[in-house]
Length: 442
Image (tube, rainbow, N blue to C red; front, side, top):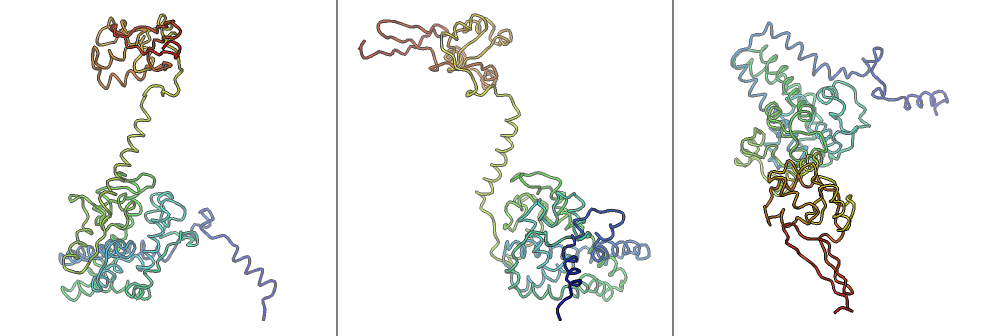
């Protein structure tokens, strides 16, 4: 049977209703914006875990296990989810892939496929509305808001994960994510601590709930802190930044400006002294035959990016300084006009450019007599070593005194039809003349 007109109208209204993310958050609808499932696992469970620590003493072995498991699960995200699956910055053998997928799921951050899809969209649409955790929406949104508030995934930028759909490890983990996350995130640490030294409760609280919480917050810092503080040595068109604090918090993911510029490089830190334990572990895996084909961007291209950014900063700083009126904006005057105007103000010609030195005469380090002797004359030779080779600072200061350009560029004496037109003499009585003869005179 077909649908009635009323049913069709109801379906049409349902499909045309705007998504909750398109509505402003108010006191009457705020709870509709909250992703309660994510809030339960990311905020409420950790809060309960913190409360139960009051009745759960932290044993030494449990603390050591929690730290070691934290580091391994963190590598599952940084070396596995991020650098291997999301960016394909190196190749891994099957045992390494299984390990990374297992410890990665223990971090409670979704499946490899889901995580990589969002991260590739983040790189493709950084700082735009299609970026799933854009810092332009605020620090706290990029840190945790994007995961605890509902998102309209139709607005998230598209990304290609077809390569991951051919990876059996990725597909298996994606299909069995919930069971895998519960086992590796909570059950496994409880069993280890309980069976080995009898601390079942501590294993569940410290090795499970709180460890997952801290890993999640550390990873979220890559979305927020790494786009908020630090330097931008390679590109400043987008928000990613490099900072050692973020690197320490995120197992080396803090050199984020470099990473966004060269995402296929297996390193985040390229200097030996920079903290990047994920890079070191990938290198170790290569030495023992578990990883291979580690990708590194050519150093020539890296240095070009660094140099271009330095030049950009220099250009911006240069633009804030007074370099004098640009030559193309100066008026053009003839020699006779220059000489006549010099009678009223202190004008000197250097390199074909007229300068007004009236306010500088008394400050001239060489004495006002020397600079007065060049007024109304071409002082190019004097300024450039004929009398004294002036410093770079003197050249820069002189540029701020430009007032015009000489037609012809310098003093000229023209011989034509037996008539001599003398433009004047060089300073220090050193006259350089150019003679032009007409065909008739020759």
